[in-house]
Amino acid sequence: MAQHIVLTILVASTLMMPAIVTAGDKPSKKDATVKEVKAMSEKDQTAIALSAAPAHIAKEAGIMIYGADGKLTETKKSANGFTCIPTVMNLPYPDPMCMDAAVQQWMTDRMNHAPKPTNTVPGIAYMARGGAHFEKDGKVVMSRDGAKIVKEPPHWMLMWPFDAAATKLPIAPNPSGVYIMFEDSPYAHLMVYQDPKKMK
Image (cartoon, rainbow, N blue to C red; front, side):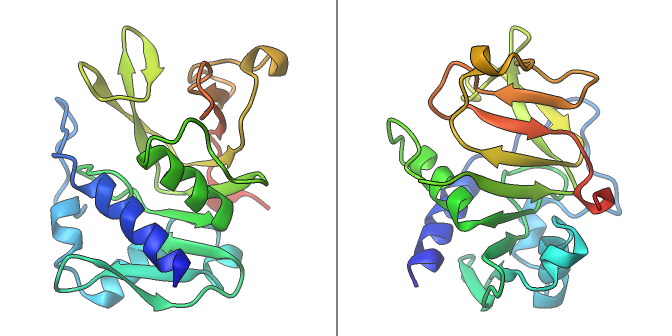
């Protein structure tokens, strides 16, 4: 029940953001927009949600989808600690996520503007269909104010506070595919541009 409440608050808060579309980001006819996700059948929402993670994770993951009232509802309990949702941000293309309990806590803290994340162990999240981040003046930022949206390739994340300087890792997307996002924030975390579905 607690997990259900956390995810409902998390995703409902995120999806109340207005749609952000940049030039060239118009969805193709094959892709469903976020506004359409809530109207999709349980089967279609489930398929999108599970497409976020590698098959061995998705197989036993919990699932939450949107009901007729527009609210998230748990349709399958997790057997492996991961829960998949059909969308994270209000994007013009599918951006499902499959996350463990620590990431759920991390994201809830961020949505609630907590001074720092309170998860006590590192969390893992998969976004095999990619996602997006905000950039302003060439830097990845947490707020969309005055920023542009930049699409991300398939990736996975390690949600745990990192000291960017100590890691010596890049602090912006780069050819290596690895960087610390939000490097000057308590919400700094590791981004890995590696397709989760191709990981062995």
